[in-house]
Image (cartoon, rainbow, N blue to C red; front, side, top):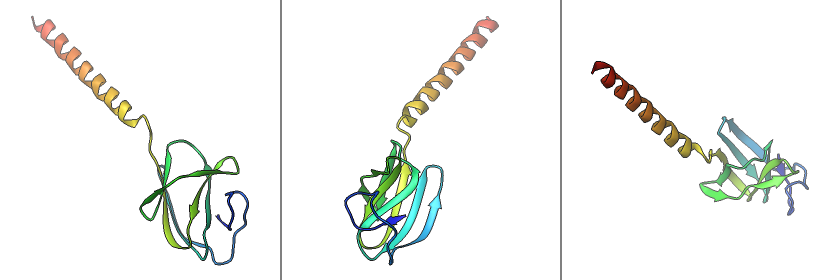
Length: 118
């Protein structure tokens, strides 16, 4: 929803002159193309959860919590691409642990094969 003017993302209603042209919704990314004739809020009726970031026209933007459970970003007047991206914070640690585990298993199997030959 595109909300009207105001300081709080939960205070407005859809205003005339606001429109959403396109929504791409993937598991780790939501892209919304919006056009508005005045500054307002874009509220994504999706759960507010740590790990999400917002980018408006290539510029990082802080996500606000709307109605205690949704994500909202302030959108200036005009046409904009608003991109929400989810970054799993522990992804690289998980990848590293997985790689180390694979190396340990390979080393153990090779050591076992060498011992069974002798």
